[in-house]
Amino acid sequence: MIRALRYFIIIGLLAAVAVWLVDQPGAASLQWGGYRIDTSFGVLAVAVGALAVIAGFLYRIWLFIRRAPGAARSSWRGHRRGRGYQALTKGMVAVAAGDAGEAQRQARKADGLLSEPPLTMLLSAQAAQLSGDERAAERFFRAMTENRETEFLGLRGLLNQAMKRNDSDEAVALARRAYRLKPDSEWVSQSLFELQTRSGQWLDANVTVKEAARNRHLSNPDSRHRQAVLAFQMSLVAAENGDAAEALKQVKAALDLDGNFLPAALGLARHYAGAGKARKAGAMIERLWGREPHPAFVPLYWQVRGASTPLDRVKASEHLSGFNPGNAESDLAVARAALDADLWGQARKHLESAGGDKPSARICRMMADLEEAEHGDRAKAHGWLVRASRADPDPAWVCGSCGHTVENWSATCANCHEFDSFSWCTPPHVMRLEASGGGDEEVIAVPEADTSHAFIEHMSAEDDETNPAIVKPPLPAEG
Ligand SMILES: [Zn+2]
Image (cartoon, rainbow, N blue to C red; front, side, top):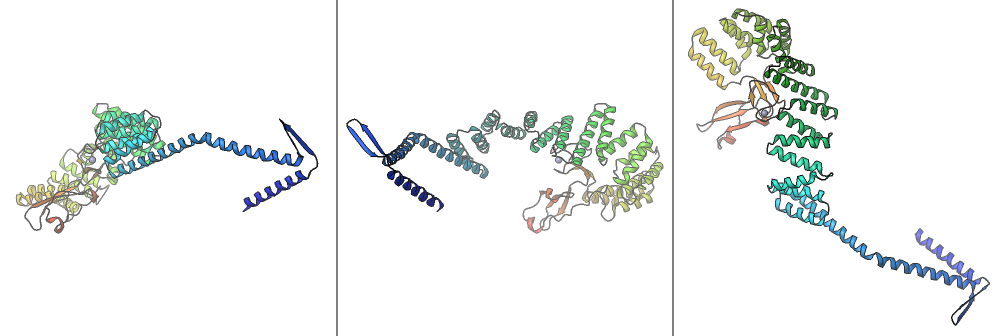
């Protein structure tokens, strides 16, 4: 509306100017060849203006004709790029849907339409992987690492491939290269750490943890705990190599970093006991017993208290149990010594107190020993041994990731390679149940706490619904 009004005003003004010019006095005369034109100055001015407008219009037409081929070319290119991106998108969707054939077809199409190899190479690599052609995928990933923009993506692809085929040397080298490229990437930092711990590169892993904390990928307590685990693992390696001084230094460092780290506490108590520092070791065990009574402390405590006779051991155990009265491990420490000292009544009292109405396998075995030693009652002893086979297993170092159980703690699980996965608890429970209808027995493994890890070794199909796993998870480990 405002625009139209503006045109009207301009046209009106031009008309007024033209009329005013025509009305002006003055004459102009043009002579060209055999012609002579006499006119007023106003008419000449209007004619010159009209000629200028026509010339401008003709120039615009000429420009349009001259630019036409370029415009057509660019429109064709735009159309091609659009189709290329469409193929790329379709290819990505095919990858997500797991359609290898379609993914490869779209990858080839996108590659032909787009002159941007970095974009299409990733799709080609993924399509190749999907169709099981790891070698072709590797070629694409390698090509991607040669381009600065796609180097990281290429390295990530190669790293995943190396991890899949368990080539840890190659994987560590690739992870390091990716880490140099993007040190603040949490994925790279975590992958590098996992690879380093899997291949026993404890010192390098320690550096990675510190840098991860600096980049805020790990909280301060998590970082300190991981460093404690690594330090204690290094102390175990040093002790194995006969370097006692380094072993002591690392175990102390581990406890400085995480005072609640039980394996390191046990390690230091063992060191003090071995080095004849009886008072230091004794005080440490008493303090830890109040917090985390671990059965491995008991023989150490006997040693540092100089308890050489069975009766001395009963006294030492009673003294130790005073630091955590009522705890099952305290009762078991006394029962263990009382059994050796032939103090049947005392042993029975503490075993019953430790076991309650659901004694664990360890308590059942000790009860069997007691029945046989005190009364020579083999039938009763056998009964306790049968009960032991069905009772909750003894606490042990259990991998929280795969359920693997070991006697001695280590920084990584030998079964699933998870770092810092061991905790002292009751292991997954394997027990036999009478099948409800048939005669077959079924073996059901029940995890200690997390039922998502429950696995069924054997279960007859017809009992699947009528007899679900009616096994209650065992009680959590005490201490
Ligand atoms: Zn494991």
